[in-house]
Image (cartoon, rainbow, N blue to C red; front, side, top):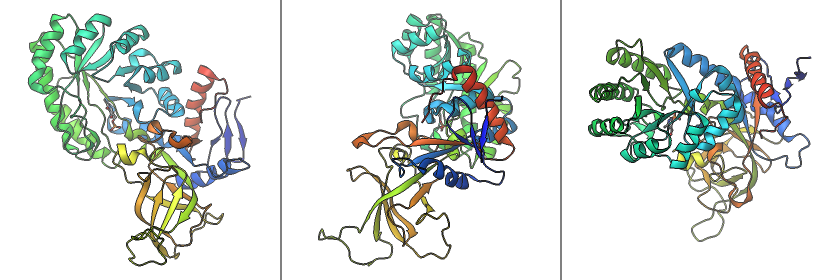
Length: 449
Ligand code: PLP
């Protein structure tokens, strides 16, 4: 037998949690509804919040990348979402991986990924981590300072080094230049030191900042990388790797890709021997995950005298506070760390997925479940006035920098993930890719949730 069984539109593959196959016309929102039944049917903690991961979206992004940037191999930045099935899928699709720690490296290697498909893209590593990566055969790594060169020379002298240069990240949501990247003026001395230590520097990397909405940042960065390549030549190196980093946004991807390609054509016209890689994180996963949360409590906001408000006075001020079962200490840490503003929509009311369009809305605030008042998910938003405890709110775009940094503060568990293949022609491909990796590598019935 194929080992795959179908129960309605649910697919079970040994070694994987139940996946929803879905129907061709199903969008993720409907996928969330279907997953809702799976998550809540007969469970003792039936109201627990849960993610729905549409793995076909990740696959779609892979195809989109190949269409737009065929010359550039993506190395998925696993920090963004180290979900085991996302990793398996991407491993099966042939991407590389950007790892920032030994922990991340040891998540990727057991999938059967060759160490040459990993870049240790953290310019400031503990010596023990560098030593461990040498043992694991992970040779490609970034640096931006002299101390790093001494550490590498001591414990991993055959490493393939990539100098991370500083670029303009002022147009990005999360600026990384405050912490990493060698200013161009320092690069000649760094390369001279690397040469003196007999180290092998193979190329240049940059990161324009995470959440980069200004595509022109990439062309400026490629220009700077060109200058660093020339500095490499002056120092006696023949660089053959350009790493254009992460920062790719779903909305601006095509525009960014076009600008990037133009810049590469302009600054690296003769590139027969040049290998180009990137480290996208958010691009692959942001829209692949939605989060469904249950309204566990509801109350009126306090008034200035400390009592409770009786009626709606100012229509812009929240007249009701909803408490949901995931918050900023969990999945919504993206509000604090990733400068996001997730917006809820009603998934189900009073047991029904049908929310009449004409329903009156009122200003509301949405709070997480912990005892801390910083745990506010939405200070003001419009929600139907008839929402009650037990109803479900969902949030889209919850795949990047969410579950990976969630804590269990106050004893609240991190929300589980339910996987769907989204429906449509790609679902078969997704299932085949996952099956290859889950059964061949560890088919031990491991539960990823
Ligand atoms: N590469 C490095 C070195 C990073 O620090 C990050 C994010 O912080 C990424 C790649 C991924 O960036 P993004 O998710 O914006 O693509």
